[in-house]
Amino acid sequence: MITRRDLIESVGAGAGAALLGAAFPARAEGPAEGRAEGGAGPELSPLLPAGTRAEARLESLPGKKPLIKLTTRPPNYETPIEYLKTAITRNDAFFVRYHLADIPEVDARTWKLRVGGAAAKASRELDLEELRKLPAAEVVAVCQCAGNRRGLFRPHVAGIEWGNGAMGCARWKGARLEDVLNLVGLGPDALEIVFDGADGPVVAGAPDFAKSLPVAKALEKTVLLAYEMNGEPLPHWNGFPVRLVVPGWSATYWVKHLTSIEVVAKPYDGFWMKPGYRIPSGRFPIVTRFPSQDTAVNVPITEILINSLITSHADGAEVKAGAKLVIGGIAWDGGHGVRSVEITADDGKTWVAAELGEDLGPFAFRTFRHAFEAAARGSHTFRARATNRIGQTQVAELIHNPPGYHHNVMQPVTIFVT
Ligand SMILES: Nc1nc2c(c(=O)[nH]1)N[C@H]1C(S)=C(S)[C@@H](COP(=O)(O)O)O[C@H]1N2
Ligand SMILES: [Mo]
Image (cartoon, rainbow, N blue to C red):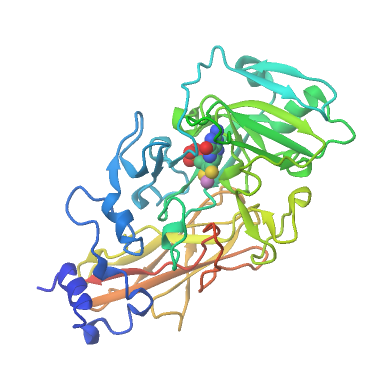
């Protein structure tokens, strides 16, 4: 019997090309580098750098399932794709991303949120009980790190070498940011709202993590100060007791362990706004802008680009010939909503429309699936392509940018039928 390993090794040795046909041209440097073999290794994408795959381990943070550990200080853990088959990602498998390693355990009973700032009409402090007394709103929304899939960039770029799992989708519940801002009132010169959390640097002089939003985005009805995630208090690692939820926008704005909100009249120039989290001007099909932060060369990252991920099978999975091959996964975008997902099994020559799952709103993961005829023995490469309601679609070729953001290339998933 020919095993997956034999096939991988034969590709590495330059043999077996006839058997595999054209299935691997885009990934010549992939499979031969060695996979996360053996029981201990997580199912990492074979497209990740060899060093990342050698280092990454499944490891549990308190209260979490084993996740793919990329760094421990600060904690950066990604969600294995087995938890990304559904539209809602479970709290105990939700990815964890921090920039700074001093992460206090916040006590909900003494937690206070300061609201004010130079361009606010007043200032005040709120505790959790007061926040919970404001009208509660809910939204199902994808929280996706700007650098999701950075590890798949060729050539490699510096940063956390994320695979496909620096994202998740949850039902968030909390108070509207608009209602909280109305408690203090916006002055006529209000330009941006600045958000800070309880975590901080361990090294003196390292910049604290704080982010700003333009007033127009901040006042959208879906922007929440969330105290619940999938019907439970937020896990510590995802921002307990309160985090900002900015549906449609990159997770960098979703400040965790929120402690202060300031209304300001000038563009906020903290490190994580500038130079952090910027994309080259004009390179991506961005609709939503953050004009007070724009420069001639770059702009802050804003909305999530249309994307999809096949999660029914890990890349390199083996299936038995004759079994039904249902290819499925999730698709999402920055809030226009997913219109369609198509799948190709022949390198883009033909596409079939996948069936879409339940619509949980324009900011949520949308599941998709399609049952293929039992495929012939050998390797078969599938790609999914999502299109949103304004006609934007995933790219075939990576759009390069130095920080490694916005990777929405159609992902090849190769399945070995044995
Ligand atoms: N306080 C705080 N909030 C933060 C960050 C952080 O380092 N500190 N990182 C941001 C980034 S870049 C991401 S991708 C998301 C990750 O959210 P999660 O850890 O709940 O998955 O949190 C955002 N909010
Ligand atoms: Mo991020």
